[in-house]
Image 1 (tube, one colour):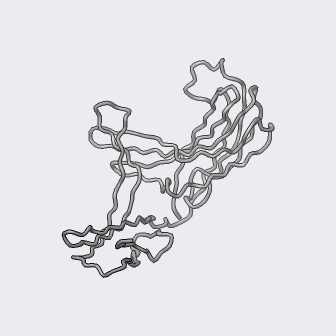
Image 2 (cartoon, rainbow, N blue to C red):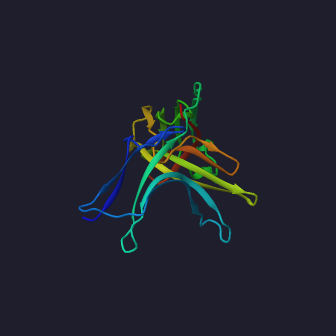
Image 3 (cartoon, one colour):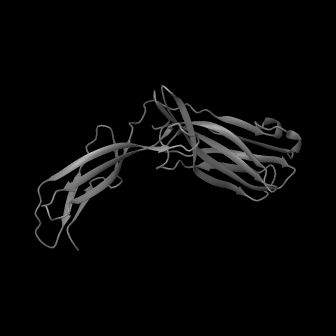
Length: 247
C-alpha cells in the first residue's frame, strides 16, 4: 500500500447547519516517511445543472442539487504523485420558527374529475375518494392520509404514490420547467376490496428532497401523484402540489 490520505469529520452523520463549525481530522497512512510541499483544505459548494433535450437550439439548465465538498490536497515533489481526498457533507437550512398550519385535502376521483381527456365515453366507471392529512409538510415527517375505492367496473392492478420534484430555472430569455420522479411507493396490489380504507404513508427521501425553495432565478417544488393502474392498463392520476418545510 502506498501513501493514503483520508478525511474524518467529527460528526458521524455529516449534517451541519448554518453557523456551525465543520471539524475533524486529516489522516495520513504510509509505510515510510513522505515528503510534501504543503497541505491545503478547500471547501466547495456547487449547484449541479443538467441540459434538457426537450428543446433544440435552446440552452435549458435545470437546478438539480446543491453539493458541499471538503477537499484535502497534499502537494508532493516533482516525481511523486499528489494526494487528494474529498469528503461530501450535508448542510441543512436553519429550522423555521413557529408552527406549521395543517392543510388537509379531501379528494374524489371519477371519470368526470379527470383532466386532459378528449373522449370520456371510453373510460370505465370508477369512484375513488380519500384524504391527505396536509399538503403543508414537515420534511422529517411522513406524508399521511387514506384512500378508499368505492367502485370500479374494471379490476384494479395497483395503486401507487409518486413523488415528483419540479425544477424551474429561468433568466431574461424565459423560464424552463422540468419534473422528475424521485420516489414511487406501491400502497395497494391487486383488485382490492371496495370501501376498504387504505393508508397513505410516504417518508420523504433524504437525498432527493429539500424544503420548497423559490428564488428570482429558480424554484424547487414538489408534487405527489396518486396513480391507480387498472387491469386494462388504463392509468388514473390525481396530482397534489406540496409545500415542504423544515421545523
